[in-house]
Length: 179
Image 1: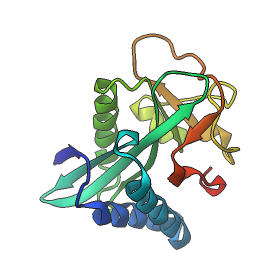
Image 2: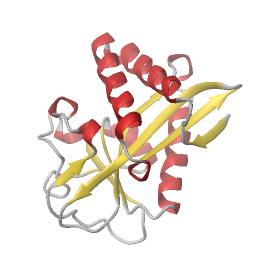
Image 3: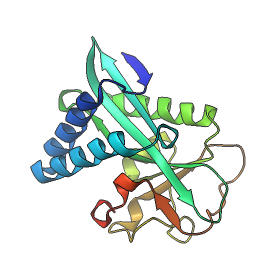
Image 4: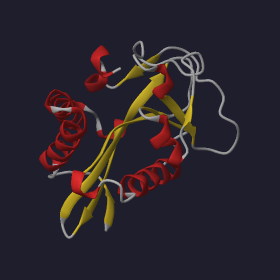
């Protein structure tokens, strides 16, 4: 298994994998929505505002995760939002996603990122250190449909303190239906 950063020249492969993973678990409509999100993230987000991590086995892409910048207007900490995350359906349950997430979070930590946020299943993401946070602690860019899925992880030494001010996501995520 080969973990790596970036996907230059392999963007369509990442789009296809994440779209298929979501279609298999959430239905065709969700797969198409995530495919559009990933296509837009990869095409429109500045390199400094996105981190893509992938895992391959025997040259085949079997997992991908994306972190994009999340800015808090009154806070100078560096924050990235995790999502989407996906592993090929035939490899789910083998902890590949957890290994990929651990790799990505470690890389962010080494690059000086202060906080990682995500919006998803607390049971899954708690396995790699994410903890529930309230919207008062860290405002989401849009009203959350599932507030219990708003999770954060402090990547530097010390206690996680509230993120100050309203937040702004990258343009590709700037749609209320993602939240």
